[in-house]
Image (tube, rainbow, N blue to C red; front, side):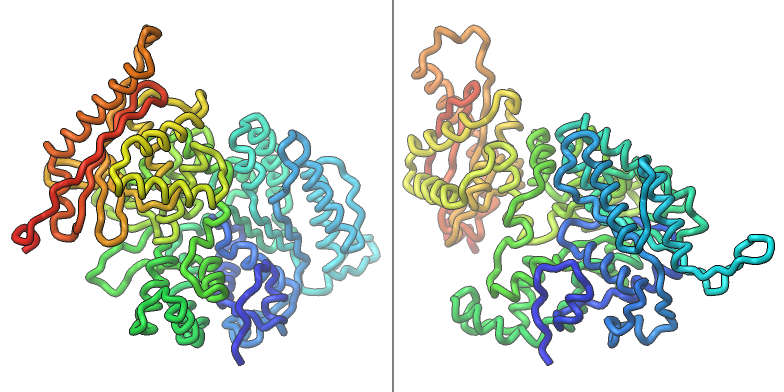
Length: 581
């Protein structure tokens, strides 16, 4: 019987009862329970963390019928029932100090009431202690002796604690350091209570999208195990290649026919072509920090596909940017706006180990959070480079296409997608028609939207801003493309092998420039544009496209002061037939 494509749900019992597709992760869970007492897992949003915790909750609730046919059902697991405390820290009202404490307290009280327990203590750690001890006592049978001691008759049923989105109260307020620090203190006090309850607790599992709250977990317990980059748990969330084929193979043919009918794939495309394109769009995530990336061996790191995007793809039957469609989290756009190197467009990049397993919200570099939240992924590791042993890259086509929109939102704010598409068409048409005045107007209007707080009078800042503007409109914009004599600032790739090479020159406006007229500033910006064009010629940037280009357009972009833009545009020299040969 063909299983249903999953709905957007975090409930394991609903997935099973409604016969939805489910990637069996129970062997991972079994190994966790046999090897660890307290675990921490960091994975990007919408990668299945909440469903994983729901699965564990059903397991410890003794709901064996839900696990029929899954790996753990045929194992030696006993399905003993345990009391479960399952909390999500993804509260919407935590932007004021003290609100987080109230939200957690209400959840503890509601959990207690559902089990017939009254939680009366006023501090979080005391309330947690009261709930854990109350659950332990309820789920274990005792008999009083003559000396009023209590003797336990049944097997020990200790408490299981599951915490989802543990870092949400911190990263949701990352732009407000006062609230973020206050929330971290509250979480620290709450998690500290776990350590005092070791003898009553059977298992603790904590998940989040970042390492931003690890300081709050510091006193949780002495033996917390971070499994985020352990090779044996690299596939615990998301779809592996094996999952993809076992769960969706019976939908490949139908999906391919729909795509061909929509003219989204060639009429002669095969299932193999469809699968290859799926991997190109949604595969590429690696959460294995140890296994060498060696193409000559069969022992390679497990790759994971974005489960949210795969499910949406088979529902809609179209290649789109599903995971990033709603835009990146607010905190991420704020971090991006403060990173004026725009390094994300210059991948691959090297990174030390601490960039993978730590994150300090006040750190100048967003690299750790970009990796932890899924915008970068591992693409190599080397023990020969002790300082920066890891290589990071954008994982797939979906992120590569959508990530510039995050920059656009960071610099220019949110804008209706139809307006963006309209601007993109106008920008592209203006370039193809060599309409320098129209390009100048578009760019000047964009730069005028930048706040004075964001502005940095540096050329590399304008590289980021211009690329954010162009990429946000959906145009394929590539930074720092290498040629034989250097790297161009920005290359645009249009259909039919048309390439646009852009060089940017910036000059800070002198403080004593009040006597300069608008026309003076315009002349200055265009003189900078001329220098940019000269550099394109001198450095022979066009050579990079000698073999594939049908047309090359060269664009010199000069920026004087805050927003005065000059543009000079010309056709580049296309390669001759002899040069192509």
